[in-house]
Length: 251
Ligand code: PGA
Image 1: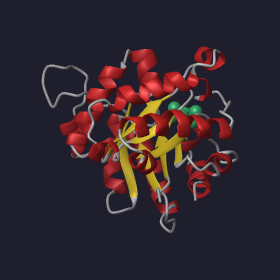
Image 2: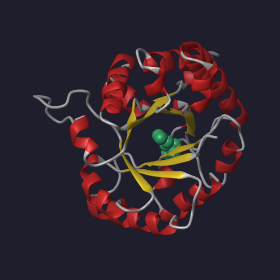
Image 3: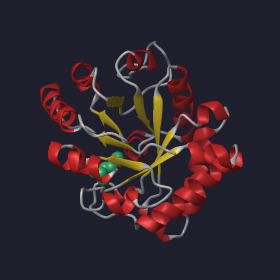
C-alpha cells in the first residue's frame, strides 16, 4: 500500500514571518490526522524558520529546487548539503523551473541522484504543455521525461522518488486534467516507463501525485483514481483552511 502524500508548493510566496504563521496553523490543524504524509515547501528564505515549527510534528519540510554540487562558486544556488540539514524533501524539475530557468532533463537527473545521496526525497515534476496535449503527444512526452529523470538510478533508489504529474496547462489556471485521463497517463506513461526500466514491482511502489489546480472541491476526484497517490498543490496550499481541506480530501 502506498501512503498518500500531499505537498504544498508555496512557490515565491510568503516571507519568513508569514511562513511561520501558515506552518503553525497547518501543524495544529493536522495534529489528529493520520494516514497521509503532509509536506510544506516554502521558499529557501523561510526553510530555517519553518523547520523550527514543523520539528517534532508529523509535518514534513521540502525545498523547491536545489543545485547538484555540494559547494563552490555557484552564486545564488543552494546545495544538497545545505538542504539536508534543513529538510527531508526537494521538488525537482518543476515546470516553472524548466520553462523560466532553463532546466533540462539532464540537469534534473543529476539533481535527483545527488538529492538521494544526501537522503533528500525528490518530488520530481513531469508534464506536457498545451500544444503537446492538443497534438496528442502527452503519453510519449511524459514517458520520455520519466525515463530521462530515472536514467542511471538503481531500483533501490528509484523507489524512493516521488513523481508529480503536472500538466503545465493546468498549473495555476483553474483548469484540471480529467481525473481518469490523469490516472491513465500516470498508469501508462509514468508507471509504465518505470516498469520498463526496472520492474512492475518498482513501478507499483513509487508514489505519484497529480498537480495542477487541485482544490478542496476536486481533490476527491483525483484521489479516487487508483494510480494517484496524492497531490502537489500551489495556490490552494497558501491558506490554512483550504490546505486542511485538501489534506482531509486525500484520505
Ligand atoms: P497550482 O500549482 O495548484 O497553483 O495549480 C501546482 C504546482 O505548480 O505545483
